[in-house]
Length: 178
View 1 (cartoon, rainbow, N blue to C red):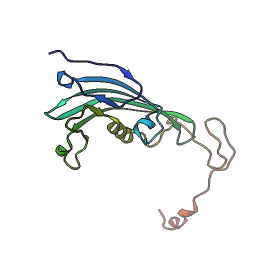
View 2 (view 1 turned 60 degrees about the vertical axis):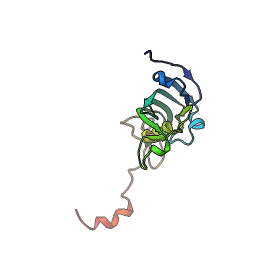
View 3 (view 1 turned 90 degrees about the vertical axis):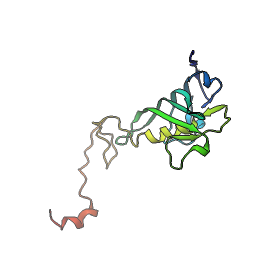
View 4 (view 1 turned 135 degrees about the horizontal axis):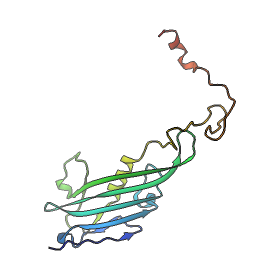
């Protein structure tokens, strides 16, 4: 039996038609430009999301989608505020089943109507981006940050500010010794 391999690049949709799935897996390469508009609220303002997906039957009424996701954005370094490139690259794997066959609390399983003619990947892709997006980004591990007094970016210039004194909020603990 010959497997159907359909590879094409599209610029928008997250919906993939399931016609022909019984003849073999469906493979797609998607580039989502302006993913915030297509996927809804995201943890970072991603410039684009590249998605490779393979869709195949899983049991009598389930569908499995898995592949690779890569997204990129530019955010401020948490130490010096310089624009810094951040990427999310991850493998992902989700199941789609009829709602009646999904157990409460089951992870990685999305609802699929019994006679659905297409698969909507927006929810699973959005979830992967939320789970794998970095909480903060640094331009480098050696980034010296900014002066807390004058705000100078210490990688570019030096400052003559005195070192900060002890924080008065900790004064009560100084009397405890140690």
